[in-house]
Image (cartoon, rainbow, N blue to C red; front, side, top):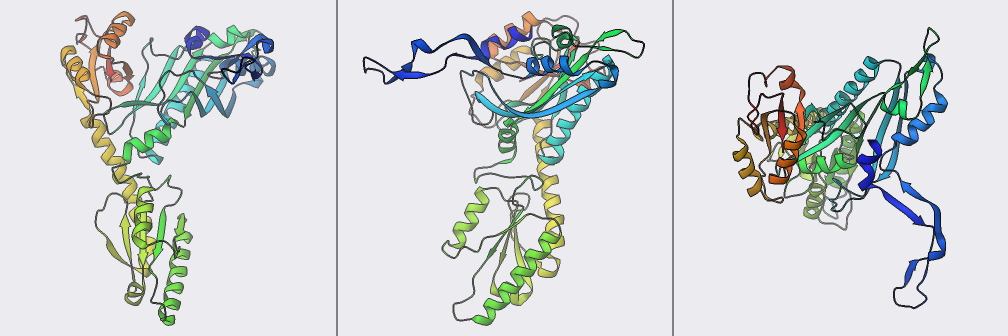
Length: 425
């Protein structure tokens, strides 16, 4: 099942070198004499490699749980790529674990979903829907796939991280067993989970605007940029006062643990500097000139949250920056939460959803978003909907399904008793 699920996405290496076209028509061509005896398949994910290794490492229950994490590049042959969101080769973090018990593996898979949700919400200020995939959308070879789904500003839903409960499928396929405390041989339970550089695309699409990038302060490489405004050429006293205030301000900000950049390039106009750092998404710009120094203040301008500049005492600037950046982080998260809540349509009929999605252009802003509807789990009907209006089940949201929201409802497509509340998009 795992191999079949990824078969269409695998890149295959058949030759080991190129050669010049002897006819001189096509430049370099594949050397027909360099065909490999056995083609090499570039892995689209690492389960087969990992579980082949687990078989050598796991002998006893004392070896479990075994948990490994790696950063690796993998390749999936994509017909249509999008920068950051879907590329043929991508860097990701993937974890693989082996457990002695069903519950140990299942708990690990759920825990990693929560870890990814915390990463998205607490650091990226990107709210997510926690859920499980439908059987059709489940990771090939898994018994359950837990997912976090985000909503971009243009209405696109984006799978932002997955965690898979593999059951014993990979353990049995690779003959990974262990001797339990009673001396009996048992099959191993497993999980795998990962997030990729797609999160960079999610970050950009969640917060940025027409002026450029908007970075949440907690993940911004530069949290504060200080732009000093030069004193007049012959005013040495003002220059000295500005330099001292600049050094003191920089030191006080760094003492608070902030990541600070001083843009003292004398060959770039101040207006160009402001535009550059705004476009790069730096959360806070501080302007400091001779007049500000004489008044004991500096000027704050946040990339988001507050539109207007504000004058802040130099003595209180470090504290104010820490507080303001925390407020900006919270503002970005709350604004994204509001978009997510307003982007989910409840109670739509199938025809209403179909009409909305068929009319929705991929580049339109804002898009139609998500539809939370009662659904009877049916792979055939799921395929029909995908064909009719290109909608897929993003997930079965855990909160509403755990609360029994589907109980007593009819499927919005078949009219039969609903088994789940499904999030389409």
